[in-house]
Image 1 (cartoon, rainbow, N blue to C red):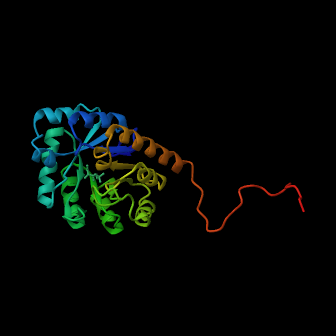
Image 2: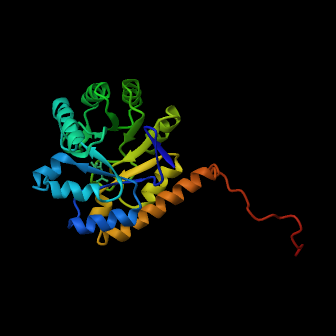
Length: 257
Ligand SMILES: CC(=O)[C@@H](O)[C@H](O)COP(=O)(O)O
């Protein structure tokens, strides 16, 4: 079980609902993933003409808790307004907060993110900020009232995996009591397993499943990887070492000379 703002969720895999070939394939993938939380972009779906009541009803009907997001927002004002609209549409005070600062990497604007987080927390939102592994920004977000932090693994949609494992490890050890989710850039299940082995509480991904040849099968593969990574973390993995250490005992070996 993983705790998000007091809500216990069984699955440690959070799935995005964009980019699938069809809504039916998306629903199949969500079901195969076992995800307890799905994220949906109000702006992106609206831009693609899927903002009708029927589409939102379908998202609500997936049987998972909805985490609306502010994907596509570049300013504090856009993000705050989108969050307010999402609260109306989905009846939830959860918001995945994205304030994009740079278009080539879709890197978050950390200054805008912190400002928007402060405003939304004051309005009663439970904010899930999409951030980098920057520890100072992370501290400011926690001070603003964020109980969850979502550092990127790699740029959104890149599938590069965990490009800064050192930074992600440092974040885990600096914030042992904060719910930490690796969000974005995960390409294959082993990337997700690695994040879980590091002690991350969960992973959020979208493109790797939506753009797979068989999204439902890939969703299942990610579910297994996330579970394996978590079980491995709880089993307290061995420390890597520089020198060889024989795993076969030599005592009692036959003398052949
Ligand atoms: C769906 C969503 O919220 C994305 O903005 C998220 O960051 C996932 O990124 P990937 O598509 O790289 O998994």
